Image 1: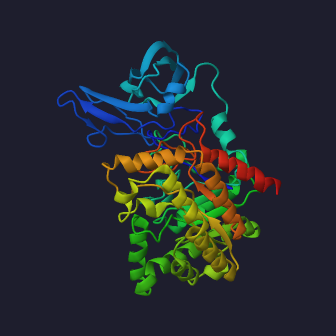
Image 2 (image 1 turned 90 degrees about the vertical axis):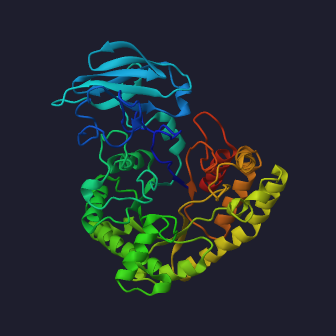
Image 3 (image 1 turned 90 degrees about the horizontal axis):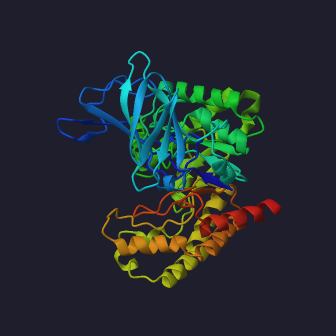
Length: 476
């Protein structure tokens, strides 16, 4: 069983890091003259790790250190540490109790407001930086929270697509990468942390290489993984994410590159994707040398599109480098489609679950089988890079509260658990291998109920079902 980790942002519910400010928002500025907040210009100059070098006159710089609703479950007594010379202030859900050398004792008010800090003073020659928020007392020795590590226990693979901010990425050069210590992690999570997490949990990493990354980036990334990853672990390597999906910049980029290379118009984005994937895997295999069998070459396709899979697998270099065909066999996606959403809002939960049960036993299983047959024909394993329920209003509007409420209720309904068990058993029955569930934890909304869990400490039938299936698969 694999798991997609929810992206790191100030809106994330999941608190993976011991430093509770790891999900902090980037700095925003308010000038006394207009009282308007801005996240971009005219921000003051920032250090390489994204801390302000100065506080502009008659201005305020603020960050939401802890924004998630989970802050109401955190201890009241917290401490805020920082390096450099300067002074922090606190507001909204945070209240200063005492200033100590190198840190402040701050009260978590456990209200509805974010736990926020303001940068009152900073020395341009030694600016405030490396802000950390810990529970009061001895600083934790580990990078990750114990509760998070416990949830990761037993997962065979961790997919870092969202931790790497893969979709629509602008990363091209090695220096563009996320780096340890960057405030608010706007470029995603540093490779060092991803490798450390896999070394601790003994889960194979699944990396998504940015679609614009050059060969030097690929080689340096591969070398760092080879040098630091537990040698007993394999590494799954995928080029970007859903390059077949026109919703993402990477699909348009692949089409442009395919046109530049003169690839056949009908499937040029897919053929470029296959070609670039093969080039990336060749670099990884070269770096790993005698251990190149640890590099698992992923070619990802559309679950409902056998033509897409066959086109990709016909591409340049695939036979030499492919180990896996990966798809995302979601269920329930058509119910919130443009054609059906208005009607679906009137469904009862009973009727919705009857429809989901029917789909899982019919077209969803058939799609799994079709992709399993294609993989087998090409001598490949079949992975699910993502999967699970896909109950969301795909029209992207916010005034269909009835449909959103129905979908949220379904995700919390006990019947969703047995549905997941049957769905995952279907995957095993058709010969599917690693299944990357999407995703670890998130707050449900009109944009979907993707998390297997909504927040820490709150059970969910999806998560319970996954644990049951994991136990079943592990015990044989």
